[in-house]
Image 1 (cartoon, one colour):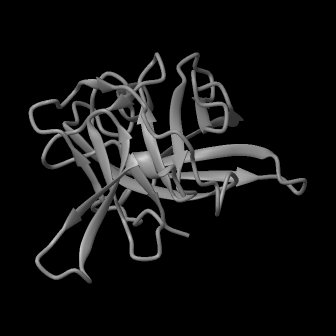
Image 2 (cartoon, rainbow, N blue to C red):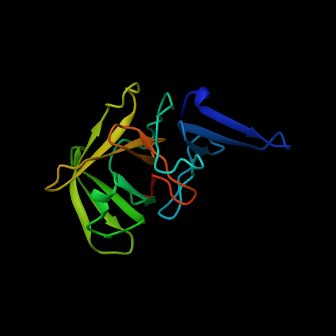
Length: 193
C-alpha cells in the first residue's frame, strides 16, 4: 500500500490489537484495515481524520507511494464535504448557500476504458451536473500519484481529486494541496460500487 514511513501504528495494552493510520497529508490521517488496505467509507462518513483546528487549511501531500489496486478507472464515489470556495463551483447550482454537501461522483468509461464523462449529484436529489474528467499524473514530487480532474460542461473551473488506495478520493485545492476538513466533514469521497 504505502511506504512504512507513512504508516503510524498506535499500540494498545493487548499486543494483538493495534490501530494503523496512513499519513496522507501533513494534517490528514486515514485508517488502515488489518489487511493493510485503506478503509473505505460511504456517503455518510469516511475514515479520514483531520487535524483539529485546521479546517479550511491546505495540507501538503506526504504519502510517498500510492496503491492503485482497484483503480484508476471509472466508478461511483460518495462523501460528505464542506461547501467551501474549492467545491462551490461544482455544487452551488445544486444546493445554493450550502454549508455541507452529501454528493456522488460517477466516473464513466467508454468501451476502450478511457474517461467518457462524469455526473455529479447531490444524494437524495434528481438533478445533477455533468462534464469531462481525465486522469493526470502531475502531483509535484509524486509521479506515481493518480489525480482525477473534473470540469463541468460549459465551465472553465476544474477540481482535482487524489486517488489513494484505489477506493478513496481526496479533494485537492488549486495548487494541488489536500483540503483539510473539520471534526464533522472531510474532503474524502469513498468508492461505493
